[in-house]
Length: 346
Image 1 (cartoon, rainbow, N blue to C red):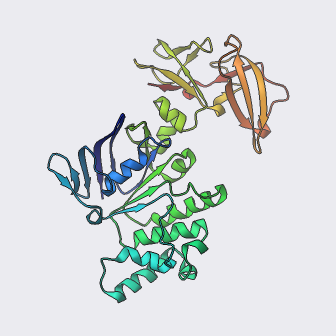
Image 2: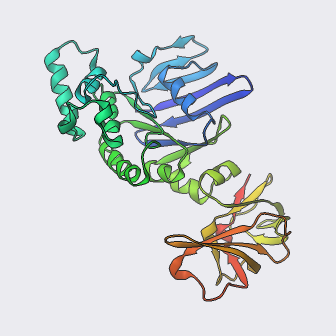
Image 3: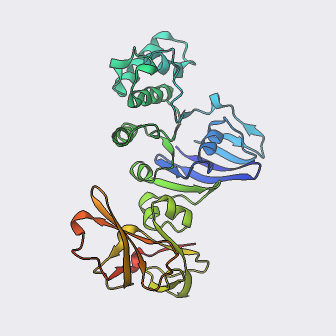
């Protein structure tokens, strides 16, 4: 199975440009609200039509602007799980699932396939309940069953956990990934939640204002986001403009310090990022005097906000986050950063 997407679509001043491939994997599109994530899914599903480009699934051309091909949604064999599930309120869970088999005229086959899906999703005990009687997790499983019962060639999930509380969200993420591990086809997940993307996805493409960065393996993206947008979306708290001053050296005007970098600095550098967990009182490299401004206690960590010795008093404080058990007896006079933890952003 392979999905190939290269599309463009304009809405007034908004310009969506997305290009990526998806194999038999969990592929994530990570971005803030309004960046074009959901519109990308709607173009793939055939709900919206791009202005130009091409969409191919398993060798089947779903859309091609040059060849004037635009397959209707019902012929694309694409399953689309909407953010709020879109269950029919007057139908039972079982009836909602069987709606996914409208093309199957044999009643016995429909009933058998429906029973198989109830068992697969472990929701047989709620088969007679209506959506208003279901928990968030149960409603999600019913909506997923309505899609999977038709055996789509591609499954697309649009912010599927956003309406759930934190505990249930983590539980269902784990269960859903386990359930779909044997699906054997591509799963495209849209989310604004970096933790969700990290847990669920094999690869991730970052989208900002309609523009999608090249897809990267999940751990590679978090280790080296390469762009400011990707750094922000993967949770980097400390971002600041930087100037290349050597093959492995940068100057930070706002902090008035030079930093040694782990990777060679390419032309076109715009900024650097340092994750809040990367500062270390015992690190000898990139070590400079600091002034602790404020400390905040969290359930399992502390956050210390500081400025460097020569840093302007009206510039944003730098964040240092560390585990509770590592809290020093007295505020450190200096902090260091390993060169490998200086993120170069272009």
